[in-house]
Image 1 (cartoon, rainbow, N blue to C red):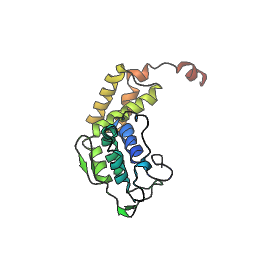
Image 2 (cartoon, rainbow, N blue to C red):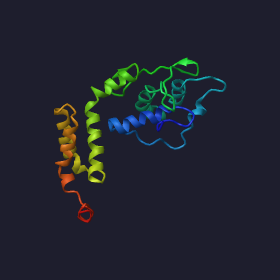
Image 3 (cartoon, rainbow, N blue to C red):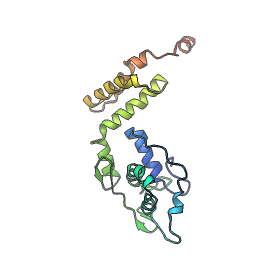
Length: 190
């Protein structure tokens, strides 16, 4: 529901969510004056979301970013804005097949999940490490945190993604142990 509009799904928001929160590769911001998707719809035509997105991508400026986001979001198109399952959109069967920008092909959400869990697993480990470390140290990551992220991600890979590797890696890291600002709050709570 978070990645949908009130009256329709949004493959762009869904794809962007996956890029930012699972793969850690956010897309650049949209250029100004991007027309609403509904304006792409031909008068009187019943178009599926995939059809609307194809018309929208005809602009070269839009196509470059949408090539990354749209396949991910369209793989989730079987789910309505409320998250219920459906098989048709505008009376037509929903096509959830696609291809990641890195070349992996999928036919639906199960194949996409498999691709993300296997060939893109290291991207997920890195993204998860960055997000949890950011939360744990209470600040954004800086260039000098790269070594810590690399070490923790390497531990996750070596330990087949065990959560304990991530948690121990963060707790034992220099950025976590040397973070500032906990002194007065910790002392006041004792």
